[in-house]
Length: 359
Image 1 (cartoon, helix red, strand yellow):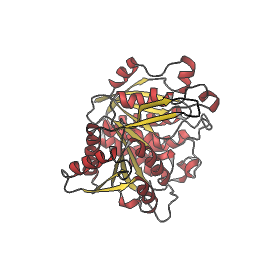
Image 2 (tube, helix red, strand yellow; image 1 turned 90 degrees about the horizontal axis):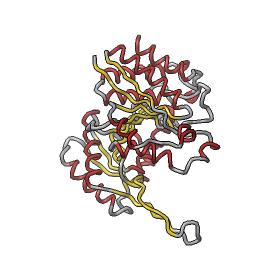
Image 3 (cartoon, helix red, strand yellow; image 1 turned 180 degrees about the horizontal axis):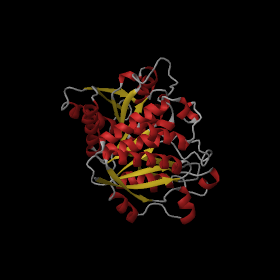
Image 4 (cartoon, helix red, strand yellow; image 1 turned 90 degrees about the vertical axis):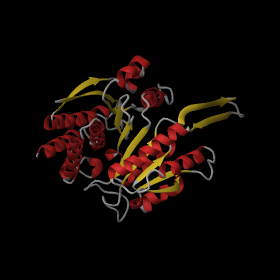
């Protein structure tokens, strides 16, 4: 029997609620497919910072990195609490610290319309909204390079510098083509802005062409980011795998969530594909403090993220069983949460996945 050592960081707001359902499903999957889950709990988030003044230390990061994976919930509390937290602290000292510090250089976000889930796009279905976004996760505008000059004066200047390296770009592009092969997709689209960002995105384009030449059976094409935003709404079926920058990937995947049923079904993985240190899996929704503790949160994104974790940890059969159980549960309106037009509570939605997986 194999063992998986999982660090669980539920965080704030609805994070603990949806993470509990994801863990419930993971436990059931372990029982069915014969693996053991060893759990270690981590309290970090906005509430923990307000109580202790601590985020994630370097020592914490070393311990987290030694796990097989990290299951993350959400960070953020009500506005009064957030007003006491320096702007950007949670993002840089918790989320980005794990992504950058553990070199989770791929942010993988499936955009899939599940059966029974509505899309705001007329004429689209689960057959036409089904692609994967590979977002570069450790470079770009999120590196924190920049600063102020004459801050707080009428002559203030702010610089935010995009960091782009051949090493970082090439490895994520290569992962995108490998993902296309693995998922049986025939197209990889680079999304950038080469006509305006003529230096950083020229590097992206050149690296893309060179890597694409190694995958002759996969069609490689390019779109400006503004065109991609339009085509994701008007013609989403054209996409197989999108590979893009850190900033553009952040924006595009929220649009992808909107066309595939909303944030409640949007999963993600922050991956070190070489598995040198732990990868992190998280729903992309926020902490939603306005509904926290009310049993209204949709756990689907957290459970789908857990399925991605199982894939990454070498349990593909369990991962596929979880995904099939989610699809079957969502097909029944009585087991959908309110955001998907149902009446089920958070725990009832999780129970439905467990029951369906065991049937």
